[in-house]
Image (cartoon, rainbow, N blue to C red; front, top):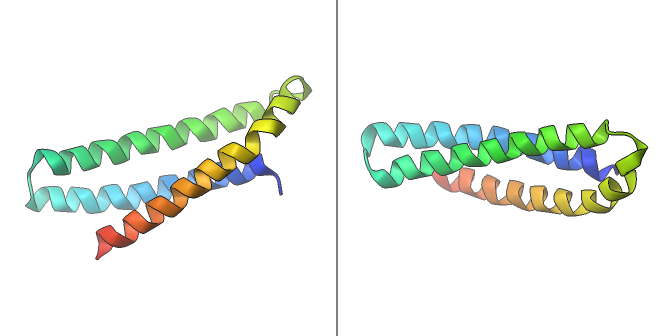
Length: 99
């Protein structure tokens, strides 16, 4: 398995999960106007920014050529693990928020 592509796929899944979470938080914001709810929207939005940056980063590294191949190959499994762990956490958060 190509860990770079897996990491990018997990980041894209995270963006989708975060979009759903933000939509639910905005619905809550209409009912519960509090700093905490605004904070939830802000934190989820920043996580989207993080995942967009990850996708762009990996896309640039993927096309960088053989000069950075060893570094990319060494780092890819770690970023993949981080993104998969984040996906699991966001899936749980999504499930809890829907309940």
